[in-house]
Structure formats: structure tokens, C-alpha cells
Length: 397
Image (cartoon, rainbow, N blue to C red):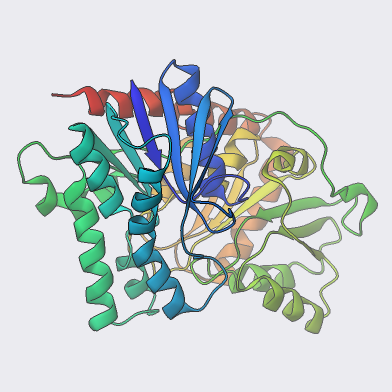
């Protein structure tokens, strides 16, 4: 099929979403589809650029900057983004090209007008991959009230949903949110779990054997450290386990809370934890090969279900997990049912400490826990089945 994949998450970005979309693009190409990734770029100095890589095209369209700017300016830029992309698409060598299917990834919630334009031009079906139900999650966390800004973002999101023929959500627990939307004939909501290629172990700029964590069982967290993660409890856990000379913690990444957490660790005099800037996604397997347990953190105020990309990367690297997540999240049952770690849903550092110690002891006696992690990855999270599922939906007449 000729497929357009619309996203603002793609390399050279280093986010988990960018890695996921790169892996999805590779798999579309591997299965013989003619794929074009269409994304906004504020960094190019002309209306559009085109590159061919790994069997698919990447079309970058000039659009306003949406990263690292103030809240109001970002909102305005994201609102303008799809219209700027449409204008520059018309100037590109892809003007007038038709597609047999359009796939897009949310976040962002603002791609609806561009996707609608492509759909009208091609007369094809569309598939929305939704990972964050925004602005719902922001309201759940108290980051946004239910006033005018919420209603604006909710209207934008609902327009996006109206453009989709199929919506793929992360877990079964998120299906119910779209019950009203799915009552319209020809619409379908289905579970499309996250995915990740199993990357080879290559070099890594972090060598734990050369740090103060050498010889310890290392809990690792690699990824964004922001409001949505609720990372403070992990630092509390570090402090609770400071007397264990055989245990250490490594936090790798960026985010609004990264510097603050590092400063808090320094202020508390914690010598069992290290912080490191984000590394290239291809270097993550090399990092995990040196560690023993992966950390998952989600702010307990979340009400939606979320299986973070880092959980997949832990499973692919055979790392059991220690998770602190919102109550009722489908991820808790996934971890417990498949016996791939320990999970707390009460946001208590006492519970988290107990589970951490239990998991440390398990590593010494459960010789197949790492094998179960790899088996879960192979069963649920390989990109091959996700591409087949998306293509099936796009072909469904």
C-alpha cells in the first residue's frame, strides 16, 4: 500500500515516541509498503526537504517551532502547524500525490486538519494511533482546570477523532473512553499496544563499572523526567535504600524535573544514585545490559491507562521492572500476570521499598525471570504484528 505516516515525533529526536515511529516506518518498509513519513520541521530553511532512508521517504515540511518555548506560544504554533504543513506540502514534489491509507500519531492533537486534507485528496481510510488522551490526562493531574483552555483543547482533540476511521489505543482500559465516538457506523476503536524493535547491544557512553555504582545491583530509569511521571517517590526510594551497599540507582534522561531531582539528591547527600544526560536511543541496550532492574513511574493522579515505551525497552532487554503507577492501570495486571517484576499502585514509598527488596531477592533465585521478560516482548510488542493490524484496518471496506 501507499501509506502516509503523519507525526511530529521522529529522529533525530530522542524521545521514546520518535524511536517508536522510526521502528514502525522500518517495519512498513520491510513488509513492502510504499511509506512516506510526513512531519513538521522548524529547522529547515526552505518549504520542504525530502530524504530516502531504510526503504521509506521522510518529507519534512516547514512549520513553526513547537519545542522549548512558552505555553501560549507553543499552543499558537501547534494550532498553525497543520496549515503551514499543508501549504508547504502543496509546494513539494508530493503535491497531488494520493495515498491508499493515512496513519497518524498523537500527540500532537493538532494534526486533524492536515489529515483531513490528505484524506479528502485520496479518498482513503485513516488510522489514528493515540498514546496520550489529552487534555483528559492533564485535567486528571490537576495541571489544567475544566475551563476555557480545557474546552479549546478538547474541541481540537474531538475534531481529530472525527477524522479517524479507526483509533488504536494502548490498552483495553482506554477503549471505553471512545464508546460514544465508536457508535457512528464505520468507526472502530481497537487495542494497538506499543511496539519496539529489538535493538542490538552496541556501545554506550556510560560505563557503570567505572562509577560509584560498580558491583551493585542497579535500578535504572531512562527517559523523560517530568510532571507526568511523578518521579519524586523514586528519589524517596533511593533514600530509603541508601544503607544497602549492594544496591544503586541510575537516572538517565531529560525533562522538567531532571535537574531538580539531581539537586534534591545532592542536598540529601545520596551517594547511591547517579544522574546522566540523555543518550542516543541506539545506546540504550548497551546501558541496560549493565543494569538489573528497570524503573517505571507514572503520576498516581492519572486516570487513563498507559504502557510507557521504556517498559517495552526493558522487556526487550530482559530487564524485570519495579513500577509505581496509577491505580487500576492495565500495566499492573500485565506485570503481575506475566511475572516480570513488581508493581505498586498505592503511591507509598513503604510499599515501593518492600517490593524493591522483594525483587532484589527474586533476582537471586528466579533464574527465568529475564526469559519471561523477553518472551512478553516477543509476544506483544514486536512491530511486525502492529503493521499488519494497521494495514488490515486500512484495507477494511
